[in-house]
Length: 64
Image (cartoon, rainbow, N blue to C red; front, side, top):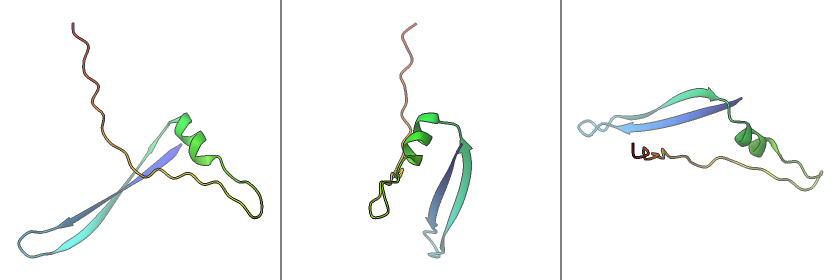
C-alpha cells in the first residue's frame, strides 16, 4: 500500500492571504511499491528512490 500526500498552496488575489492544505489517500500499485522500497547497500552507502511528480495522462478512446 502506498500513501500519497498532496500539498496545495493558495494565495488570495485581493487580500494576499495565503496558506497550504494537505490531502492524503492510499493506492495499491505493486510496481511502484517495489521500486520505492528497494534500497539499502551497506553501512556507508545507500540507494534511495523518491517520487518527484505525477501527471494526469489522458488515454484517447479507441475509434468505435
